[in-house]
Every structure is written in C-alpha cells, then in structure tokens.
Length: 114
Image (cartoon, rainbow, N blue to C red; front, side, top):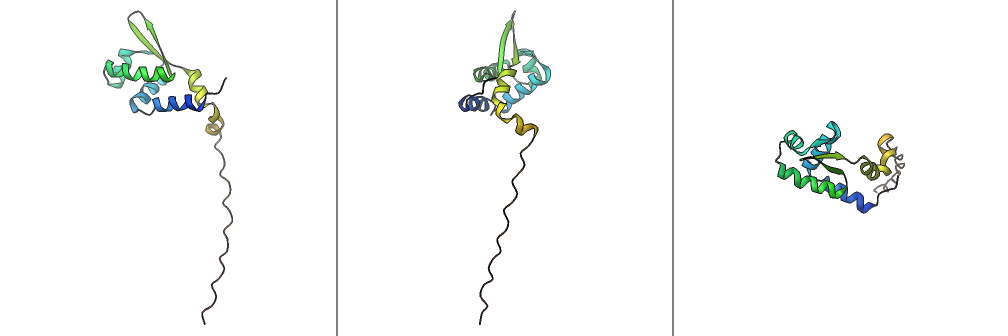
C-alpha cells in the first residue's frame, strides 16, 4: 500500500471537518452501502444537502458513488481510509510511552541575611 502525501491527507481531514460529513462516514461504516434517500432519512437532512456533502467526500476520495438504476449508492473507500491513517496504525494500537520527566534541579539556598 502506498503512503498518502501530507497534502492528500489534509484534504481528507478538511473534508471531515464538517459534523454532517462525519455522520455520513459513520453511517456508511456502520450500515454499509446506502442509497441517497436512505442515508438522508437516517441523518435527517435533505437530499440536496446530502448531495453537497457527498460531492466533498467524493472529491476527497473518502467515498465512492455508484448509480444503480435511478438510485445512487454510496460506499466508503477502505483503501483510501487505510492510506490516510497508515502512518498512525502503530500509535492507535500501541500508544507511545511518554518519556520520563527530567530530574528536578535543586535550588541553591539564598545566602543568609545578616
């Protein structure tokens, strides 16, 4: 699997900066491919608003749209999702251990007042 450039990854995260688009990705991850009407109904949004958000997610490469008859089905692109998180897989499964705190320096006592 090839690594995604920082620019491509930033484009994906920018697309996911909207809560409605995160809801779309969450719904697809949970329920699998859905047609636009079903997805809009699940999220409680209009088809026009869904279409706008779909376009952003498709442009970022997170989802794929496919026409089946008169319906458009949407699916997540697992390859793209794996590419953008590939550098972080180890951090997610095994969080890094924080380095030990440096030892505290002892303060010199101020000279005694006379």
